[in-house]
Structures are given as C-alpha cells and as structure tokens.
Image (tube, rainbow, N blue to C red; front, side, top):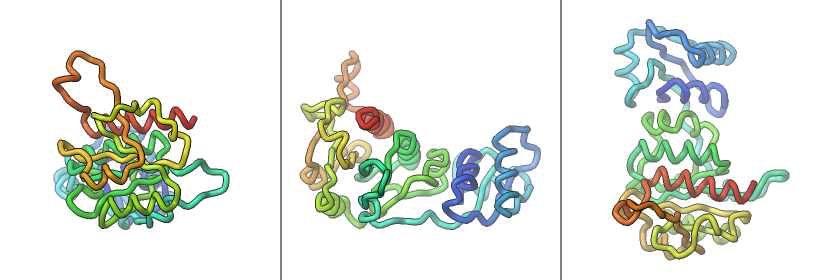
Length: 246
C-alpha cells in the first residue's frame, strides 16, 4: 500500500515496481499533483478508481492519505553486497545504516532526507525497528522508490560486511569529540550509522564503527535538549557529507 499524493506520484514516476491500481477520492479539489498521477497512471496502463473519501481513508493504513492510495508490488530488497558494488561513472558508495529507529514518521523523514542528500543505499534491521509501511512511505514523500534498501538480521554483522568491502563506518554520537563537519573520510566509501530514538546506537554497533562524530550544538538550550531528534540529526549529517563530496 502506498498512501499520499507525492508518494503515489513517485511510485508511478520511478517505475521501480508495478502499481496494480490507484484509488482516488471523489470530490478532491483540482491540483497539479493529481493531474500528474492521472497522466502517469494512464501512460503506465494503471487503472484509477474513483471512490468515496471514507473508503479511500479506510484502505490507506496511514494517517491523512490526502485522498489517494495505490496498491503496488512490494519494494524490492537488495543485498548489502549490491549496495557496495562499484559502478563505473558513479561516486563512492554513500550509505545510511539505521540501528533501531522505531517511529515510522521518523524513518520516513530520514529516508526523505537521505534521498535528497544523495545517499546511495540504506541498511535497516529486520527486528526491533520500523520497516517500510504505508505511514513510512507517505512520510518519505516518494523517497523509498529511489533508495535501494537492504534489510538485515543484525546491524553488527552488516557493519563487518561493509568493513570487508572497504566502507568506512561513521557513527553519529552526541558525545564524540569529532565534528561531523570535519570528517576526513567524508569523500571515501562511507556509511553513516545512526541509532534509534532515545537509546542511540547499540554497544556492538558503536564498537564496530571506525569513527564516531557529533553534530556540534551551541545554542543555549543544547545542554538541556541533549541531542537532536534522529530525523533532524540524519538530515544534518547526510548533508554535511554531501557537501564534502560535492
């Protein structure tokens, strides 16, 4: 299930997986994004069904679907090895590893920032963490259609596999003395590692990072807040690396 106007538009635009049909609520106000969805669906041969808004919202499985949902094939999963494989003419791998992000809205926001910053792939744990649901898909605003995703049994083992392939693991840790803006390895094959809400990275995950870096906080409230929300931290860190690689 894909819910939300932008998410459905990117599902059709990316053509990474097949959409079976589109459900659109009756009586929606005219909007460019709705016109785009209708044109893309027609071009792809995907039927658009007009239904009462209550039926669409009940089907969505997500908050505020904006009157549009789609039924589609599942997102394809890739192996960690595929994320690290060199591709001629493409930059070094720039990966994001999420160690236990449990809030689907946070996960969606993280994926949206990652896609905008040029992340080339994401690694998620299969257990004790949010996976891609309709809520995540909507919050990601279509980013999931472009980000290769690897879902692994354990983050610790995945980090070992990255190390074997020459990928630097940079863990985001609020107590680290190094600033994420001063990473000397930012232009190398790299994986940013973020922990979950509240608890941060697991002990084994932290141990298997090559470098720990923090986001400097200088505001008066920084000492009481402690650290940024994981979605905000991911956005700052991803764009810090993207700027260094530009």
